[in-house]
Length: 331
Ligand code: ADP
Ligand code: MG
Image (tube, rainbow, N blue to C red; front, side, top):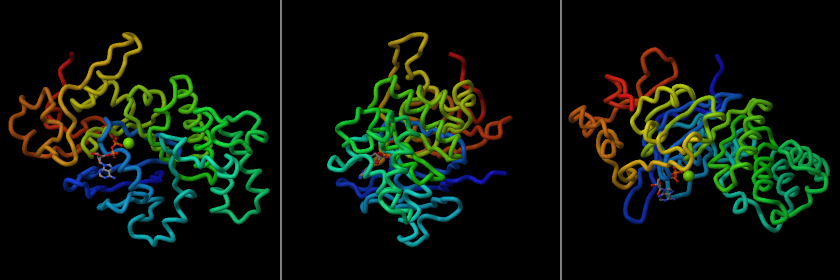
């Protein structure tokens, strides 16, 4: 059996907000395996970024973390700050949505990549520069030996995101977390960057955690999918589990809100307001928006549904009182 590269166990993140605590992550348990893409999908505000930042130990001071983050079996929250810093960028790395904000405008691309390399390798500048050229080539930058001396503003948006990926993989991490890495890019470039990420996952045997609010991007990219709502995973499974036999009404609503290739332009909104971390509904957090809650009775309002295995499948799980007993009706 292959061990997970990253394991979260009952992860909780609470922010001290200006008007009281914000329960951003409310008990997330997941595993990301080497050479596989785990897509984490959910609406804006569902706690995806807070989960990612907790996984790499980069939450702001205003956050409290409970539960555990295991990186290749080692508990991030129990280790020394020195060890955490040593792991970050070498064993676990992250790519953010906004490459322009993450790159230093006053330093060349090559310098930023070679600095990231030298943080974890005792080599001279010339060796690190060679490594920067090599890794820029690997992420699909043409003429990397010439472009290595460019500044971020000389790169296009897509190239900047490739440069960010180069910086993140320069030390060949076991785990790469990509937080909405293609949101700022146009559709063609989006596809290319996703192909690059999946190619790297195969080649380097990384565990890729791909965070997105768009189910459309994960169908061809992911091995497994976790659907988040209000800081919880409400459903997880293979791509087929999620797309062909969704067991949670929220997953189904998300799928219906995803633009359909056969009916372009049709974008259904999910009725109701997303649950917020300052005012979480009791019971199932989705119940105020759920079309099936009425059929169950009180349980949806009063009891938190556990993320239980689905019958007949080893990885498909869902947290829903309604579908614990029956299938969703066909539309
Ligand atoms: P997502 O990435 O899924 O859009 P986030 O993880 O960014 O969601 O946010 C989850 C919740 O935590 C939201 O309600 C958000 O407003 C809140 N939140 C995020 N960062 C902070 C912060 N630094 N201080 C207070 N609240 C925050
Ligand atoms: Mg986010």
